[in-house]
Image (cartoon, rainbow, N blue to C red; front, top):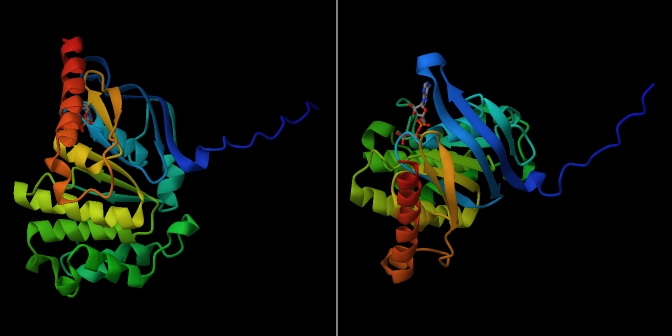
Length: 277
Ligand SMILES: Nc1ncnc2c1ncn2[C@@H]1O[C@H](COP(=O)(O)OP(=O)(O)OP(=O)(O)O)[C@@H](O)[C@H]1O
């Protein structure tokens, strides 16, 4: 009988990061073949706020859906804190914040925010992240929704409903939040206010966030790292560390340092795109 292979402990940091290695995704075949992602390597440390930034069609949503376990990869390896996306999704270790709030109209805001937690009481979650009902009240307060907790979604503005969707993400008890352009349907003033609200709440909870946006300024304001992606096939042009001090508030976007980071992100995208043409 062959001797068993020696036990190999997982890499020391496997449970402390998201690791993407050689990831590729192809949709369709023949004339319909689209290489949505090719050769994606990315490491995201636990607790980081990381943004995927790039033009339409560069594969941001595909990458996010693969991380969420909603889409199969064509090649490569993905682990979320040591788990496959499918296992992490089954264990309810991933919270998804969509573009539109997707609240249930017949439930109050508080019940909407608590719904996933209630439905998934028995989930095999990361014990450090399990939330309590009181957490919903705290997060609703932090997001300025305490007075609306017992209203139904129809009584709230679009911005408030999106805040409720973000609250639901934080209360879900998952260590990882995936946010797919959560502010894209909102007007500019509401977006500005919501970015700051999101930052305030994230500072207190420090979940790992992977956020998708088309806005360089939004990416820089929110992130520890901006992943600049270019299309055909979707690939990572560069990962830019945003070394601006935290916490970042209303004044964070009013500095030459901020403008320089936004310029660096845009220039990186332009270089990658021009290089491709
Ligand atoms: N289900 C699908 N079937 C076929 N092709 C798809 C599918 N989903 C995405 N694609 C293609 O894969 C590529 C990447 O799409 P994806 O939506 O991930 O990009 P994106 O950067 O998120 O774009 P956007 O910013 O417009 O949302 C595009 O060429 C798109 O047409």
